[in-house]
Image 1 (cartoon, helix red, strand yellow):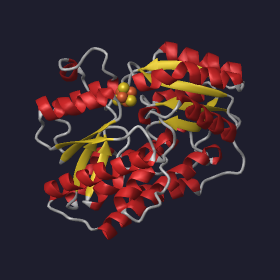
Image 2 (cartoon, rainbow, N blue to C red; image 1 turned 120 degrees about the vertical axis):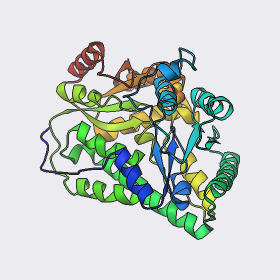
Image 3 (cartoon, rainbow, N blue to C red; image 1 turned 180 degrees about the vertical axis):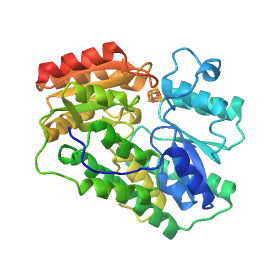
Image 4 (spheres, protein in one colour; image 1 turned 30 degrees about the vertical axis):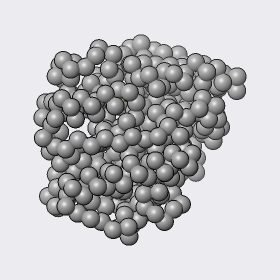
Length: 365
Ligand code: SF4
């Protein structure tokens, strides 16, 4: 796909952190996956997500973890132990899976970094009781943030922050659903999508608007596919898909498509945040059913005109592995082909990954 004369100049994570702190704000290093961005912003804290930065030596983390810990946890811990998270004022480890729960315990009980470490449990149900439980968890988190910052944002400030984040979530959803009309290569497109992991919502939206304004009527002649997995790292995965003639036309990634939270309905800020988080797209780390995941994936494929799904897995990611056999069977029954490729966050994807993706896309051409 040809790149238009679209110059975004999106700031990177570190410069965003420095600017935010220079303006008097604090920064939270946040591990994946689901958490209340708005709650942090109401305390003038910018959440910056840590998806196990690829460029980090894992020796420090290796010494403290089992060999079967995934790369997000291994690299995230190594990054922290190497002092690279020292610029964060606090750390949040949501309980997305057993590995992250283990990391939360390791940090609070043994490593005890200088910055306070907070944890958050997300219930594995979106029922009314699950929402009540999560609202209480969020109230508890508000208490900790108040202790750390000395601030006491009221309900009106919380609701204002929630609405700003809801608008940014809607903009991300618009971007992803307009993907086939946006004349950017996948890699450039995902530089913007992934900026949602660290840019303040009010800075993300104008970039998204700029890209949405570049929409074209005609879709490019690429092979549309659904990309599923945790995080598209290393980003070279997009180059491999593009070189094989494919386009990521639908997103089932934890880092983006599975975090298109709808707006909550309640006027109570904590209930509203809980509703948004629990009513988001189906996700393995929220314990959603295989049937629901299949239904969503078929819907994504249909909307994007995709006849194939690439499952891009991280080694040792149990939540994702659990769904695969039945999910793939269901897709196949509906005439959607799929391929599973497994990698690490660092370095280039292996030749084997590239060959499998090329061969898979040939079958869809
Ligand atoms: S969800 Fe998977 S990749 Fe993410 S932290 Fe848990 S085990 Fe690792």
